Length: 113
Image (cartoon, rainbow, N blue to C red):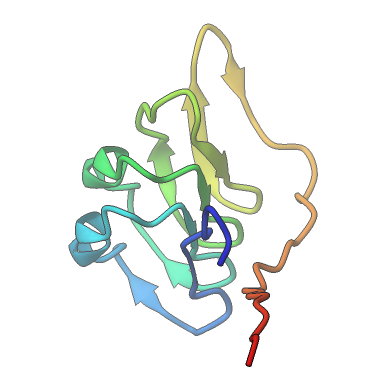
């Protein structure tokens, strides 16, 4: 059994629309949340910043707008193809699409009889 399993939820390309549901905030052990290529709109809700295990949030290609809330330093937010603005000392606007990654679950074990 692996020492650490990556817990990810890939909901990309599912034709979801409207605001990002508040129920995602309850997924406290989630490490990767991929909501890309949908029609989520509005702003990124602040409750997503409270997801303590989150390391990667993929929001690319959604009609989201506003500022990206402040996440902990270990959270990578991908937002290409949105109207989101990341506010730090300077304003950053993404210039290219991030490489798409898949999150396969691979379990390896052996049986001894």
